[in-house]
Length: 341
Image (cartoon, rainbow, N blue to C red):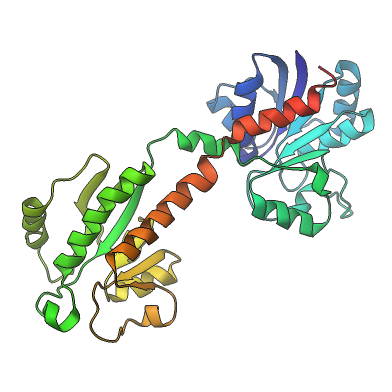
């Protein structure tokens, strides 16, 4: 059995480390020191901890010298923190330290003292992905040998949840213009999207809610009758009519925005959403300004639309919540403590 002392200050660090504690507490002696907002996370998670808001380096140095933990495990946060104090004390006593980064950006600043020196760099630093690995290395405060790509253990929790992605479909009355003129109608777009979503959700094992935003001049009955006649929804798809009146609020409430040639697509792109202009079998030059500016993506074939939606959903799901990060971090802990346990 090993003895591991844990320090956390911010909610992100606490969320990343708690799954680790749960995974090793049966075989190790764990003592948690929490400060700041991390205390509320520990309480919610029913995790015993010592309030460390007022503990200083000297306290931890004496504690470590007396109790001789095998490893110090911390989160990372900016400003004066229990993590910095524990790592500093560990260096004085000669105990290995290990930290977990839970978010991107502001890397080196998490480990500097008031003089701007990298005083609180741990012996081992777990990072989320290759991008973070390269960005950390570029800041020059730690060696490549000290880094481990593990993912964020908090994301493992999301992998066990039923995740629903909201897709906003902005329709407009193109039928009056006729398919001969444009190459498609609003019903062609609706039919294609619902059909391919049925395939995409099965392949990516996600849930999708398609929120149909009709044109203000149209009635719900126009599409409702069509949906009842043409489709029966699968278990992983729900289709609803968007009830949010404010356009920007509606856009912000969805993950992916799809439309045809609506001004709404320009607004969605400006608001930072992944935006697709789907105009199947388009017969004339596209006039949507957001497509011309590269803010939204023009797609004219159903197969390409399926590929883009599938790529978007699978990347969000797989890249960060299916990394088995908890086990990876525990493996690093076992590697670090095997010589002392």
